[in-house]
Image (cartoon, rainbow, N blue to C red):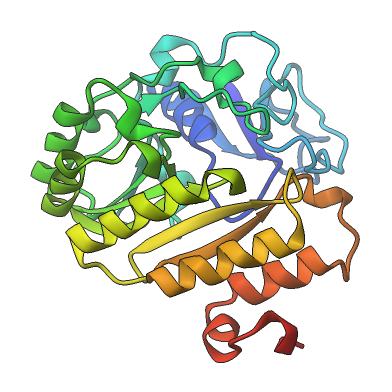
Length: 301
C-alpha cells in the first residue's frame, strides 16, 4: 500500500498520531511519505491520513486525490465519542523520522490521559475522561533520547504518578512537562520526586482568577522547595474567558514577582481582532526579551 500523510495544523510541533500511523504502516511493509498535491494526480496514494488538532485551523487548501481519505483529530471531531487510533497503532513506537529537525534526540508522548477537573474551557475531560489514568510506560515512546517532552494533561493527578515519576528519574533525560500541571494538587512529596528529575521546564496553569489565594500559596511553596528560577517554571494564563484585562495583568505581574515566567493563552483567539489589548498583552508577555526589557504593559509599544 502507498500511504500519504497531511499534518493540517503544520504548527512546528510534531503530530504524534501521524508518527504512530507511519510506524504501523511501515511495519506492514507499506510505503509512507508526506502527501504531495503536485504528484498525487498522476500517481494517487492508496490512502491519505489527515490530522488536525485545532478546530480553528483552516482545512488543507488543496484537493486531495486518493483512493481513501481518513481524517482524524479534535480539529475534525470535537470530541464526538468516536474511538481514536486502534490500540495496535496507539501503542506503537512513533516514527520520529517524519520530523527530523523537531525530534532530534527528543521523544514525545503521553504517560497519562484524562483530567478530573472538567473545566468548561477544556475538552480533555469529555475527550479522555474525568480521571487521570496511566496509558503507557516510558519505554513505549522513549529509547534513550536526551530529551523527553510529555504531553500529559494532568500528570500528577494520576494514581500511578510515583511509578511513572520513577521511570522519568531513571531515564536521566531532560524532562519537559509541556502542558499545564495542576499547582493546586502539588505536595511536598510530589515536589521531591520532581527535584530528582532533570527538569528542563515545567508548566503550571493559573486559569481561574478567583483561585488566586490558593494558587499563589502553592506557587510560593513550590518555589521555596525547589529554589528554581523562572527559566524552569512557566505558568499558562487563560485570558478572554471569564476575566478582565485588569485581572489578567494582575496575574502577569504577580507571577513575575513570584519568580515564574507567565505565558498568555487567549481563549478563542481567532475571534479576537488584531490590535486588541489581549493580543498586545500576549505579544509583550510571551516575548521574553520584551517582557524583561519593558517593566509595565502600558510602556510596551
